[in-house]
Length: 182
Ligand code: FES
Image 1 (cartoon, rainbow, N blue to C red):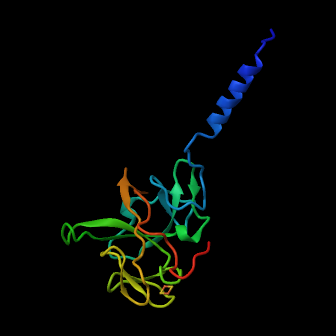
Image 2 (image 1 turned 90 degrees about the vertical axis):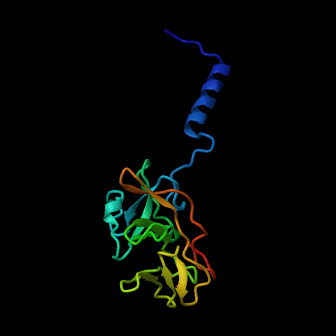
Protein backbone atom coordinates (compact mmCIF):
# COMPACT_ATOMS: atom_id res chain seq x y z
CA UNK A 1 0.00 0.00 0.00
CA UNK A 2 1.34 3.40 -0.96
CA UNK A 3 0.86 6.20 1.44
CA UNK A 4 0.72 9.66 0.01
CA UNK A 5 2.17 12.23 2.29
CA UNK A 6 1.93 15.90 1.53
CA UNK A 7 5.06 18.03 1.18
CA UNK A 8 3.87 20.11 4.13
CA UNK A 9 3.62 16.99 6.31
CA UNK A 10 7.14 15.93 5.31
CA UNK A 11 8.43 19.35 6.26
CA UNK A 12 6.60 19.17 9.57
CA UNK A 13 8.08 15.75 10.29
CA UNK A 14 11.54 17.08 9.50
CA UNK A 15 11.06 19.91 11.92
CA UNK A 16 9.87 17.53 14.63
CA UNK A 17 12.89 15.29 14.06
CA UNK A 18 15.21 18.26 14.24
CA UNK A 19 13.55 19.43 17.42
CA UNK A 20 14.01 15.95 18.90
CA UNK A 21 17.72 15.96 18.17
CA UNK A 22 18.43 19.48 19.39
CA UNK A 23 16.17 20.52 22.19
CA UNK A 24 16.37 24.20 22.97
CA UNK A 25 18.56 24.73 25.99
CA UNK A 26 19.66 21.09 26.17
CA UNK A 27 23.36 20.91 27.09
CA UNK A 28 25.38 18.57 24.92
CA UNK A 29 27.89 16.42 26.78
CA UNK A 30 31.18 18.25 26.71
CA UNK A 31 34.56 17.04 28.01
CA UNK A 32 35.84 20.57 28.27
CA UNK A 33 32.85 22.11 30.04
CA UNK A 34 33.40 22.83 33.69
CA UNK A 35 31.57 20.87 36.39
CA UNK A 36 27.82 20.89 35.86
CA UNK A 37 25.14 20.55 38.54
CA UNK A 38 24.42 16.86 39.08
CA UNK A 39 27.84 15.67 37.90
CA UNK A 40 29.62 13.08 40.01
CA UNK A 41 33.38 12.72 40.33
CA UNK A 42 35.93 10.09 39.40
CA UNK A 43 39.55 10.00 40.57
CA UNK A 44 42.08 11.29 38.03
CA UNK A 45 43.98 8.06 38.70
CA UNK A 46 40.93 5.94 37.86
CA UNK A 47 38.74 7.82 35.37
CA UNK A 48 36.87 4.65 34.42
CA UNK A 49 35.99 3.90 38.03
CA UNK A 50 32.70 4.40 39.81
CA UNK A 51 31.52 7.82 40.91
CA UNK A 52 33.06 8.71 44.24
CA UNK A 53 30.93 8.03 47.25
CA UNK A 54 30.98 10.14 50.37
CA UNK A 55 32.57 7.46 52.53
CA UNK A 56 35.58 7.30 50.18
CA UNK A 57 36.55 10.82 51.22
CA UNK A 58 38.02 10.62 54.68
CA UNK A 59 38.92 13.29 57.16
CA UNK A 60 42.56 13.98 57.91
CA UNK A 61 43.95 12.42 54.76
CA UNK A 62 45.15 13.89 51.48
CA UNK A 63 42.48 15.16 49.10
CA UNK A 64 41.36 13.15 46.10
CA UNK A 65 42.18 14.77 42.78
CA UNK A 66 39.15 14.16 40.59
CA UNK A 67 37.42 14.93 37.32
CA UNK A 68 33.75 15.79 37.17
CA UNK A 69 31.69 13.20 35.32
CA UNK A 70 28.39 13.60 33.55
CA UNK A 71 26.74 10.53 35.02
CA UNK A 72 23.87 10.43 32.54
CA UNK A 73 26.10 10.53 29.48
CA UNK A 74 28.92 8.59 31.18
CA UNK A 75 31.30 11.34 30.10
CA UNK A 76 34.36 12.32 32.13
CA UNK A 77 35.06 16.05 31.80
CA UNK A 78 38.79 15.61 31.37
CA UNK A 79 39.18 17.86 28.36
CA UNK A 80 40.46 20.87 30.30
CA UNK A 81 42.93 20.90 33.16
CA UNK A 82 40.84 23.61 34.84
CA UNK A 83 38.18 20.98 35.49
CA UNK A 84 40.36 19.20 38.05
CA UNK A 85 38.92 19.30 41.53
CA UNK A 86 40.25 18.52 45.01
CA UNK A 87 37.79 16.64 47.19
CA UNK A 88 38.36 16.36 50.91
CA UNK A 89 36.54 16.03 54.19
CA UNK A 90 37.02 18.74 56.79
CA UNK A 91 35.62 19.72 60.14
CA UNK A 92 32.42 21.73 59.89
CA UNK A 93 33.21 24.60 62.25
CA UNK A 94 29.73 26.00 61.83
CA UNK A 95 28.45 22.97 63.80
CA UNK A 96 31.16 21.52 66.07
CA UNK A 97 34.50 19.71 66.07
CA UNK A 98 32.85 16.31 65.74
CA UNK A 99 30.94 17.19 62.60
CA UNK A 100 32.53 17.14 59.21
CA UNK A 101 31.59 17.69 55.60
CA UNK A 102 32.88 17.05 52.12
CA UNK A 103 34.21 20.11 50.33
CA UNK A 104 35.59 20.66 46.85
CA UNK A 105 37.98 23.20 45.39
CA UNK A 106 39.57 23.91 42.06
CA UNK A 107 42.93 22.14 41.91
CA UNK A 108 44.41 24.99 39.90
CA UNK A 109 46.35 27.59 41.84
CA UNK A 110 44.96 31.13 41.45
CA UNK A 111 48.51 32.51 41.48
CA UNK A 112 50.00 31.22 38.21
CA UNK A 113 47.98 28.13 37.46
CA UNK A 114 50.09 25.29 38.85
CA UNK A 115 48.41 22.18 40.16
CA UNK A 116 47.85 22.40 43.91
CA UNK A 117 49.23 18.95 44.48
CA UNK A 118 50.62 18.88 48.00
CA UNK A 119 48.84 18.03 51.22
CA UNK A 120 50.30 19.22 54.52
CA UNK A 121 49.11 16.55 56.92
CA UNK A 122 50.18 18.37 60.09
CA UNK A 123 48.25 21.54 59.36
CA UNK A 124 45.57 20.18 57.04
CA UNK A 125 46.46 22.79 54.46
CA UNK A 126 46.76 22.52 50.71
CA UNK A 127 50.12 23.57 49.28
CA UNK A 128 51.06 24.68 45.80
CA UNK A 129 54.59 23.59 44.80
CA UNK A 130 54.76 26.38 42.22
CA UNK A 131 55.60 29.27 44.55
CA UNK A 132 54.57 28.02 47.96
CA UNK A 133 51.04 29.30 48.38
CA UNK A 134 49.01 27.54 51.05
CA UNK A 135 45.25 27.29 51.39
CA UNK A 136 43.00 26.43 54.31
CA UNK A 137 40.17 24.12 53.20
CA UNK A 138 38.34 24.59 56.51
CA UNK A 139 38.08 28.32 55.82
CA UNK A 140 36.77 28.07 52.30
CA UNK A 141 40.16 27.73 50.59
CA UNK A 142 41.50 30.98 52.06
CA UNK A 143 45.10 31.91 51.29
CA UNK A 144 47.20 31.47 54.44
CA UNK A 145 50.70 31.73 52.96
CA UNK A 146 52.47 32.59 49.75
CA UNK A 147 51.82 34.93 46.85
CA UNK A 148 48.38 33.74 45.69
CA UNK A 149 46.09 36.77 45.33
CA UNK A 150 42.84 34.88 45.72
CA UNK A 151 41.38 31.88 47.56
CA UNK A 152 40.97 28.58 45.78
CA UNK A 153 37.64 28.66 43.94
CA UNK A 154 35.19 26.51 45.89
CA UNK A 155 32.80 24.13 44.17
CA UNK A 156 29.54 23.49 46.04
CA UNK A 157 28.85 19.77 46.46
CA UNK A 158 26.20 17.66 48.10
CA UNK A 159 25.76 13.96 48.72
CA UNK A 160 22.94 12.34 46.74
CA UNK A 161 22.25 8.66 47.50
CA UNK A 162 25.78 8.41 48.88
CA UNK A 163 27.41 9.91 45.78
CA UNK A 164 29.23 13.25 45.92
CA UNK A 165 27.70 15.49 43.27
CA UNK A 166 28.12 19.02 42.02
CA UNK A 167 25.57 21.40 43.50
CA UNK A 168 26.48 24.60 41.69
CA UNK A 169 29.18 26.52 39.84
CA UNK A 170 32.64 27.43 41.11
CA UNK A 171 32.71 30.46 43.38
CA UNK A 172 35.17 32.07 40.95
CA UNK A 173 36.67 31.22 37.61
CA UNK A 174 39.42 28.60 38.07
CA UNK A 175 42.86 29.39 36.77
CA UNK A 176 45.98 31.38 37.38
CA UNK A 177 45.58 35.09 38.00
CA UNK A 178 48.28 35.87 35.46
CA UNK A 179 47.36 33.49 32.65
CA UNK A 180 44.83 30.91 31.61
CA UNK A 181 45.16 28.34 28.87
CA UNK A 182 43.75 24.86 28.52
S1 FES B 1 51.33 28.90 40.96
FE1 FES B 1 50.78 28.34 42.96
S2 FES B 1 51.92 29.65 44.23
FE2 FES B 1 52.43 30.24 42.23
